[in-house]
Structure formats: structure tokens, C-alpha cells
Image (cartoon, rainbow, N blue to C red; front, top):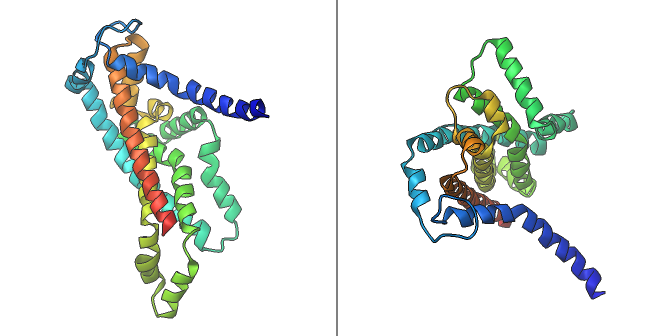
Length: 259
């Protein structure tokens, strides 16, 4: 019986090891003093982190990533909030169809979506730029923000909104004074999740980006031709930043659950 109970736990740890061991190796070599990524390690250094921060090409790509991720997160959160309200607060005749359409970008492979969007832009005569990246990423991130915000709205007691209406509040006033404050943590969590997904998106960005190349494109290009410890340091910095943002978003989601 003890062996049978320990086998599932062993499989769980094996899966975790398969997922996170490569990240641990990257983190280890980002502090290695040698330029050669190989064992044995040659010592501890923070030189590679300083090299990343001094590289204007990478910092410029990071700036472009922020120029993309911030509006993508805002747009995906806004559209996701509207979709979540429609799905949870209104008796729609074709609610199932709307829900399926919103989830469709999540179900279709990103390569197919990227090619389809590229063909559409070509037919419309729209050149690739940061705006096309923002529009394309907002579409594929919309299912995630919708589900996060909808999960928060489903926990809000509808009687609070009904009480506001009974006291004479208009639909807009009830939303602004009752619903919106209760769903703000869900909106915040959705924004952080959308920001992380946008900053790490590569497939769609590679198809829709023109001459302006965000950080994900630059890093992928460098890894193809030159595996440098500085790239390991950059990868570790991105992973840590994303974990912090995810932790903030999860904290906001849990707070909204407790309310």
C-alpha cells in the first residue's frame, strides 16, 4: 500500500523535474564565471547580469516589449471584462456560442492564427508594426482574461446589485458603485496575467512584427546563433519578473475570492 501511494507522488516530482530542471540549469550557469556553458563551474559572478543591462540592443528590445505588453494587457482586460459581464450578468440567447467564440483563439494553434492574421493584414494593406502585434496578442490572450474575470463575477452576490437597484440606483450607477469595486481585484489579476503572457509570446510576435523587434524575438534570434551566459542571465531575470507578476496577480485573485 505504501508503494502504491508513493508512485503518484514520484510521478508528480518527475514531471516537476522535467519542467523546471532546465530553468534551474539556466539559473546556475547565469552565475558561472566562465564563458563556456559546461561543467565544472568556474566560480561565482554577477558579470553577465551587468552585461545584459549594458547591452543597448537588449534594453531597447525590453522597452519595445513594455510598449507592447502594457497596452495588450489593458486591451485584453477591458475586452475580457466586457465579455465576462455579458456571460455572467445578461441572459443571452446564444451565450454558448459567444463563449465558444471567445475560447476559439485558445483552441486554435498559434501558428495557424498567426498565418491567418498575417494574410488578413496583407489583404487589407496594413503593414506590420507594434500596433499589429498589440491587436494580434490581445486576441489570443482574451480567453484567459475573460475566464479570470468571469470567475470573480460568479462569486459576487447578485443581491447586492439588486439592493442597489431597489434603492433607486441606475444600471450604470449600480455597476460603478457596487460591481466594479468588487471585481477590481479580478481585473488586476487579469491584467498581470495578460502582461506576462504578452511579454513571453513569441510565435505570433515573430509573424506580426516588422522592423521593430521586441525582446522575445531578439532573445530567440541570439539563442540560435550564440548561446552566451548573458542570455542565461537575461532568461533568469525574465523568469523572476514573470513569477513576481504572477504572484501579484494570484494574490489579487485570492483577495477577490475572500470578499
